[in-house]
Image (cartoon, rainbow over all chains, first blue to last red; front, side, top):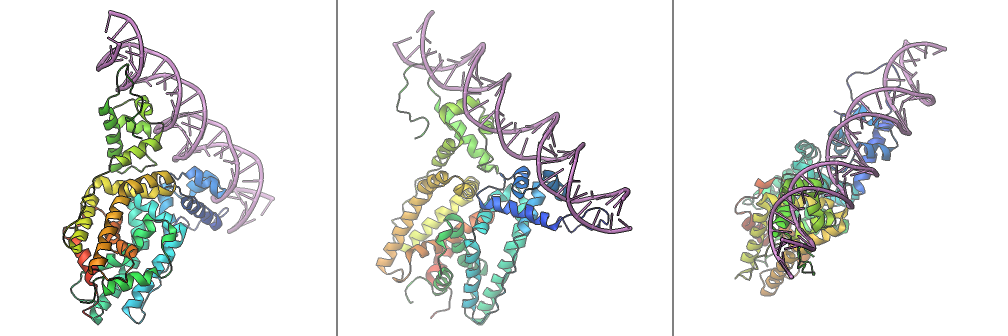
Length: 202
Length: 202
DNA sequence: CCGATACGAGACGGTCTCGTATCGTAAGTC
DNA sequence: GACTTACGATACGAGACCGTCTCGTATCGG
């Protein structure tokens, strides 16, 4: 569904420059990083930032929503599949990956922007959810299931709740506080504390 | 700093209607509930929604930012001070209060909106942080300290981290998913799971 | 070389909001 | 009843963006 993956091969004439595609998306990301809200972005502003004519943008995307979808898609990143030794280490790896992403100003700002507008533009949210969140959520669930089977995790805990117990603190910090609140070692501390519990030894 | 709390008592002439004050703020909240972003709100739209002339708004607030500050202040709510019997019950009470607030569509949407724009309008964020978040955060910390002293909470756990372990899952659900993902009993389950831990009995 | 298409720039008419100003009327004080 | 201020409505010019269109130029296939 990317602009450039049109089915018609368009033999004649000057071909569209893939570099221009990238420049436009890059400009949109840059503006979002700088604090613009999704609603505040304008095609005009993006074209200006990219050093591109407005028509060049409209030639590729029918409007802002379609462009935003591709902007979100451009953030896809191969989630580093865990498959480590212990469930504990896999959980740490997943949270550590989240931490590093949250540290990147770009993703933190984007996450906030998209979340806000999610129920204004449902489709925008669905796209982000499917592209970025779903994959990571699935791999997390797999690790938790493995932990339950191997006995590292009690069988009576709801895995859905558990997923939020691990990821919630990291997400809340990334969204509520500023970037700095994700210190080194946070992933380990979250995982170990949730695993061992907070009450003194029973 | 509220518009109506001016120091000059203004004896002569027709007094400003407090009902109009309320109608304007109410209209802004209504628009935010309906999915408008903070940046997308316009004085013109708010006045229209309130059935009020633009000049009537500008007579009270110098601009959108000042109005927004009062809108946020209008959400203040006396946080129900815990002081229960067990630390566990106090924690449940705090989270249950959060859950009920998150269920109110109004607060959920507002939270998202404000978060996004927080680093565009730093002052807006500070206001919300101080008015709404700080108080609850302080009372939570007090409960945790009490738990550490009474022995209900292990002494080697960072209280700052712990606060996020309890509140993070609730916040993440309220912000990421839609309203429905905050079922009855969620507060108890979060508190008990974090307290007891996830590993099988050691 | 030729025809076709993309490109950057920006003109264009339209809509929306801004913040100010000016109506005539309403609602208080003195 | 006279005066003063608030009120809803609306006009106003300024400015941002919209989406379309047209320049002159650049870059491709044939």
